[in-house]
Amino acid sequence: MKVIHLNTYDGNGGAGRACLRLSDALKANGIDSKVLVYYKFGQNFKIDTFSKTPLQKAKAVYNILAERYYSKWLSKSVKTPFSLQWFGRSIINHPEVKNADVVHLHWINHGFLTPKFLAELDELDKPIVWTFHDSNAFTGGCHVRYGCENFHQQCGNCPILKFNGPNDISHKTWLRKQKAYTKLNFHIVAPSKWMAGSIKFSSLLGTRKASVIPNTIETKIFKPYVKAEAKKILKINPDKFVLMSGFMPSKNDKHKGTPYLIEALEILSRRPGIKKENIELVIFGNKESAEMPTFPFKTTFLGTINKDDHLAKCYSAADAFITPSLEDNLPNTVMESLACATPVIAFTTGGIPDMVKHLENGYLAEYKNAEDLANGIEWLYLHENKEDVQKAARLSILTNFSEDIIAAEHIHLYETLINLHPK
Image 1 (cartoon, rainbow, N blue to C red):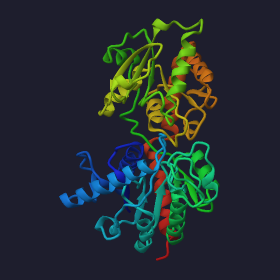
Image 2 (image 1 turned 180 degrees about the vertical axis):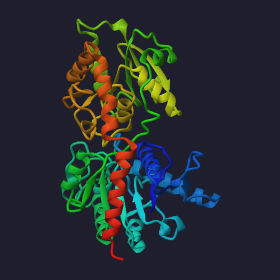
Image 3 (image 1 turned 120 degrees about the horizontal axis):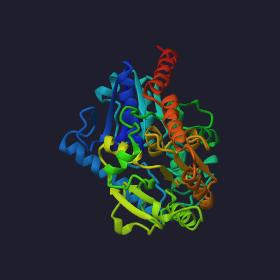
Image 4 (image 1 turned 120 degrees about the vertical axis):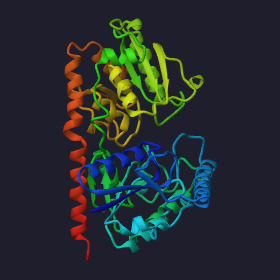
């Protein structure tokens, strides 16, 4: 069986990582699986690209930048990503696409596949699978919806757009997608129960079949290390209780919930059972530290970590991983942390409850409740059997998200779709 995975970028972002991890898992289980991206930044020999020649690369860069800047110009000053999908390219004549038994779409925005070029895939006359890594496929342009329910109807009056109204760009994009989807039969994969539920409410795709199959992770790379030794590698006192968090953009960032983390840490620092000098905050993937907010505990900024084995040691050095995200499908950081036996403290939102089991392998705080987020940190800080929680974290990944389990679920889906496809 030949499966071709299509993504805009090669591992640049959560969708790219999830796409490559799935392809590797499938190959390890005997499937001829390949990743083909619109624009390739890295040197990974396992990933091929549509944009090989200088002219193809230049066209791709133009499309990507035009899509991003036009979207930014038409959007309000809010940190909610929005895609116009005006720019794209046809892929149906590419030999890898034509020779595949199954075409598996992932994240295809930023100048790659517009609704028009998506509809063309019907000409291939083969099963199309599409994993939704965010909400864009069933909205009029936004990738993160928060409380907006316009996608239940036909979009329009978009709160993100500068020029909004009943017939605004979001509504016109919705109509373009509707036209394309009526021509293209595809099977949806939702990585989380939350995403599957969202799809059912959408006016565009609510009647389509969707399978809930999570992303996977490299369990032999993201694995536990001895915490005391991992802390020494990061030059942290082994006796410190280490809190870790991922990319902290700015205090005003909406999607990542940074203000809630700051407030939770402030609340925690004032509690009588907490010794501030015993706690250290570690942040990886940050921008310039000058942009960082002020935290009430000693803070170490690790910067961007490009090697997964070192990242696994960083997770292992932490006693708790905190993600204050307000909307996330199935965040890689949560899965990575749990795989390294580091419990996760997060809001009850998106697909996070699919991974974090309250008071078992982590703590699920009430949504947008900084006080409860602090409760979660304190719960783990004062826990008498931290090792039990750590073991539960690792076991939850091996049991539900390991490579073989997720590969088998995808293979079963592919085989079912091939057998159902008209010969």
